[in-house]
Image (cartoon, rainbow, N blue to C red; front, top):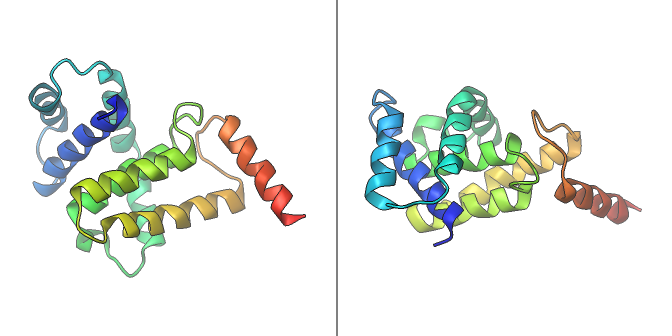
Amino acid sequence: MATRQLGRSIILQSLYEWDFFGQQSDLIKIIERNMTDFAPGFNEPEFVWKLAHGIIEHIKEIDEIITKAAPEWPLAQIAVIDRNALRIGLYELLYADLNEVPPKVAINEAIEIAKNYGGPNSGKFINGVLGTVYKQVENERVVPERKEGKEDKKTEEKVENESE
């Protein structure tokens, strides 16, 4: 398993436990334990911590986006795995550095995590929600707190060429 994929799996497992117990546990301790138990010698712990802190910092906004993008699925009724795969994907899609995680990579990684850990329709659900958000963001050309990278310029050029 690729290093960052493993990091996302650790975050998913940690968020799952934290969320399952009503977000009352100490997420930092959960992550530390999961890194020790599931990834001894993991060589990119800063990626895991950056992802964890970013998700927690933006969790209210992320949850609001999920609610708007999947109105027929109240947040509490979304499977815990799917809800947290969406949180990871949305954080990377909306708040991560574009040079580090291009939008298509963020979407694909969230779909893969959902397929690996979720139910038979999890990948499709995650794809639908993240695809909806991605289209909206692209249409509005507003991406909060992100640095524009090569991937965005390519996407803009492609969209402009297709519309001509």
